[in-house]
Structure formats: structure tokens, C-alpha cells
Image (cartoon, rainbow, N blue to C red; front, side, top):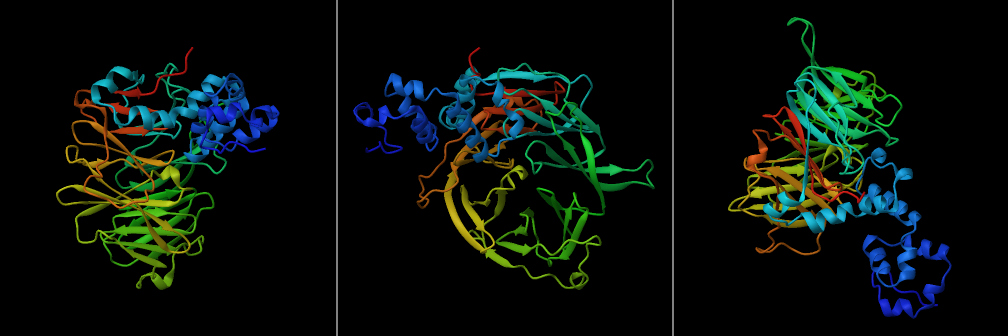
Length: 465
């Protein structure tokens, strides 16, 4: 028996093929190999295939695959409690974001989205916000505490003005959020100022842990480390990588083991890490070091005066032009190492690369041009949305987003201008530039300075009641 080719569904071929007479179990097994587009195409061919593709097990499997591909936080969806319609809405959300939201004009966007406000019971004085991939859980950072909020598993949920959990601290304004190894909780990194008097003042790295679906969710401080100086950092799983004054320090906050080594006097600007490597970026050059063994002491004596040689060096193809490096959110530490170089002369040219480790290879993945009408002033860390990376930034007038494929098998031309979408305009900014976007949920969270509140924009329609 000849089966229809996956990805090339033909209504006549299906209706006249023995394929339709297969047992339901075999249909379900075949459908488990298909993506959303193919399943929707099969559904439209007949009442039989509409029935088959309405089986709950198909959509549970699809949702798990979508969550894995996009690193969605596992507790986002109460899968056992979700109807087939709920599951279909969640599965299709990333595709709907790319097809229905990206490229819309501002007026259409404003009329179709839903806006809600969280007004905390106490004056918060927020300075940062992070929307956990999946769009359900929000982390806010203020002058007095860090809070975790549950926004509900869908855009139809009613928001609460009280956080799920909070913990006090005095901030130094650096933060990051990553999932725990079991993917049921997450770790929150902050830099904090400690000490009761000016003589006792010191700077510390703190790590909080929370399991938001536990019986009594709480932010527990599980580790801390005193530090003297930090220029930039990268959080990868249980490793905190920090850079200052020619030195890199790698600290495993679970085992409290570390290593510190000299990387030379290059003017490094950013860091990225894997479980085995430290990657440092500077203008025109990317350097990769294998992480030396971690110890309770942490210092490598022989590198105090002489730098440790990197395992690999890559020269940027845009060397010589003003440029900066942009990359993924810390949350996506388990994905391939992908970064963009943005160079600008009369336009913003974006070149996308993947660093392949441990082979030490650099592969160019994509090239495109940002529209000159909305030049970026500051990029937020990128987010995954199926096979695309979503870039978003503020230009002092609006919040702008753009989705570009991770890879593209063609070279850039002068016409390769990517479309951008205005998600929030100047009138709605209200003096704040702090925002966090989750494209796979179609949700944007912004801090409103004027209202002392959190504004939640939902761009995708909620499931029907």
C-alpha cells in the first residue's frame, strides 16, 4: 500500500487510497511524525480525517514537541486539565504569532490585542522584568525585592495583583533566569548589595530557586558568592561565568566549586557559555576557552601573570565596521551557540553565525538588513519561535519586533529588508523601556512608571469559552 507523502497532502489521493482504511492506532502513529501544518492539511480532506486529527493524544504529543523545540517552561501548561481546543490553541500559538502578528500594522495590532494591568499592593519601583518562555510566569525586579507572578496558562486568565512568591534584596541591577535541570523550576540570578553599614558593604551574587507549581511556592536563596568586580556575565545552567579586568571566573553554585583564569588584555564585551566552554566576544574577534577543572580554591596560579591560551579564535567577517553582538536569552543554554553581528554604515546589516563545538567551527546561517526607519538603540536577548529567532528592541518611540529564520540557504542582497512589527507605541510606553516578550505565547509585558504597574499585552486570541 502506497501512503501519501508527508508534507504533500492531496485530498483526492487520500480519499481513494487504502490509507483511510488503516486502524486508528496506525493513523495516530503516522500523525505523530507530522508537524502542525501537515495535520491541519489532513484534517481538511474528509470527515474521517477530521475525526482522526481531533484525537486528544495527537495534540498532547504536538504540544510536547512544540514546548521542547521552543524551550517552553514545562509547568506552563496543565496538560491533563486542557481540552482539545485548549491544546490546539497552545500548539498553534507560535505559528499564529509568526503568520498573524508579525507584519501587522500598528492600528490593526492595537484593535485586536488584549491589554491587562497588574497593580501591586505596594509601591514596587520596578527596574527589570523577565517573561519565562511559555508566557505564564513573570519575574519582576524592583529596588526592594524580586517577585514571581502567575499570569495563568492562557491569555484568557484573569490576572492577580499579588505575586506567587517574593524575596527581599538590595539590587546591583544585573539579573538572569534559567530552568532547573528537571525543568520544573527555575533559578534566578541577581547581583546584590549587602551589609548593614557603609563599612560592611559588599557585593554578592545571589541565586534564588522556585518551583512555582509546588504546594507552597517560595523563592529560596540557595547560593551566594562575594565578588569585587564584574563587567559582564553569562548564566548557563548551574554555571555563572563572570568577567572583570582580564579574568574570567566560572562558579558552579550547586557544588560551590570554581575556577578563575587570565584571558589576556583584549577588550572583551560579552560572554556566552556552555557546560564545557567559555566564549568571549570583542570587536572583530570571538575566542573560545575550554573550562579548566573547578576546585574549592578556584585560582589557576600559572595564569595570574600569563593568560591562558584559547582553544579557538574566530575573526568576524564584518571586522572593520562598527558592530555589536546580539544573542539568545540566558534561558536557552541547551541550544546551539548562535549569535548575530550587527554592523552599520548606511544601514544595519545582520550576520548570523553558529559556533559548532567541540569541533571549533564557525558556520554562517543567515544575513539580512534591518529597515532604516526603525534603527535599534538596545536589543533585548533573542527568543525562539519555531524555526525563527525573534529580535525586539526599543527605539525611544515604540517596542519593535522582527522574526528572522535561524538559517537561510542564500546570500544577502540589497532587497533583503526584513519586516518589522510595532508592538507598543510611544503613547503606551509611559516613560519606561523595560519589557519582556514571549512570542510562543503572543505576550508582551511592560513596566509602567506612571502607573507603578505591569502592563500585559496579549496579541493572540484566547481559547473560546
